[in-house]
Length: 354
Image (tube, rainbow, N blue to C red):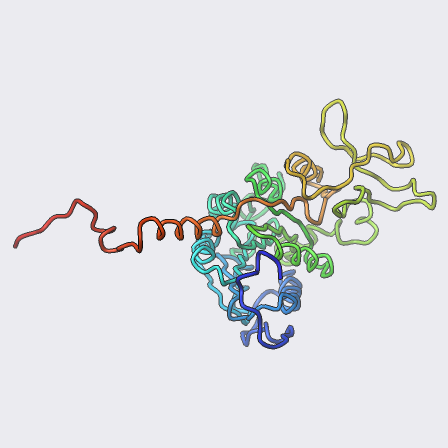
């Protein structure tokens, strides 16, 4: 079992997908990408071999935040944007739990932006699944923090003026120790990313592109269509050259990612024209976040061409709850058990005489 899950009790018997399905009726719009993510998570959880009573899903507010109802684990449908804060309290006080946060682009990046970045920088041992459909679905189709500039919605009838967040760039900038991106309909890839996130000690953020077929249908079609995906999707694998597209028989077809010696930025090249010299080899474990951040900026926010998916960053940093537990143990050794009543009263107390 991984270091991240070492303290979580194992299941006494082998579990299946059925064990993680609750008895609640799933209430999302027919065709919503959330169904695919739910099925992928429910079928993936038994692989962890954990007692389901020690698995917790915490959500905020939004369509994705119904998730805890449909998982036969403990869970909490909390308040708007505050799921990372609540999950932090739980993960630090109960290290015998596997804590998962389910949130959306509006919930996490608008009202919850502050809580998200601090969970990431602290590196609390929790896993954050950020469903990004680039729209507010629950409130019926307003633009969200990830909607592209010019997006026409009920709240932006003349087009959005806001520059969108790139969740992966934001996470890397906040010193997240694990950052990945995947797609709702690619179950194999989604589950491979979930495995890596579950094994990671510390905060893992997984952005999941998720289709809202009612208010933003087809937002990620270029990444899902087999033909267009060849030129649009960059599948990252640690230790492998960053190449994509349709390679020719001589191995010189397709495209690659290189670093521009003049600017230091990354750019996409035609391998047949420029050859394979200089093509970057993906290093998810690089101590510096520079290249991971540069990769996250390759995708065009409007067309989504050159969108990296997979694990962009996976590095080891001190884990907040581990260090907090060590501090508490040290305090007990040095000072003995604390007195909560004395702490609350302090030295300045007043006696009110009637």
